[in-house]
Image (cartoon, rainbow, N blue to C red):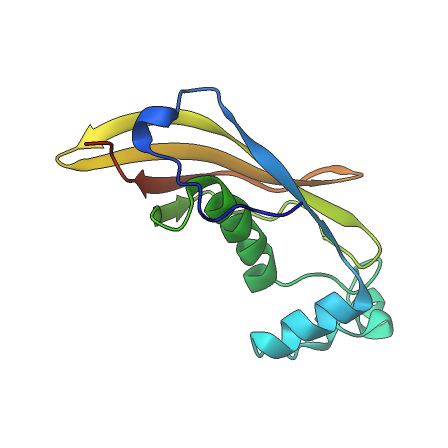
Length: 148
């Protein structure tokens, strides 16, 4: 799916219960190795199957920074380039996200409020794979531009 970055969502466009478009992330060996190198997490559990299995996992698995980046990309596509991520709470891993799985990040608008000139939106966000929810749910608070 291609994102049209010229479109900007505003605070007034958002209603409680709105769903974020889900974003799927196939976890390939290549993707895990590149992610480990990019964020300098060279622990072998993230790029070596034998080492990961010896530590109790079924296969090499995505690291925290990569998983958090999945949330950020999903939220960024929803809020547009003029939106800002204000805070993240409840980011908790409940199961491994291993090579060969596809992890899909989903979310919905949990609430919206005004804070002075800011239009704030609380998004409930979580990650899923074939075994269910693997990360979250948590809350990502964002600021969106306001009309007029």
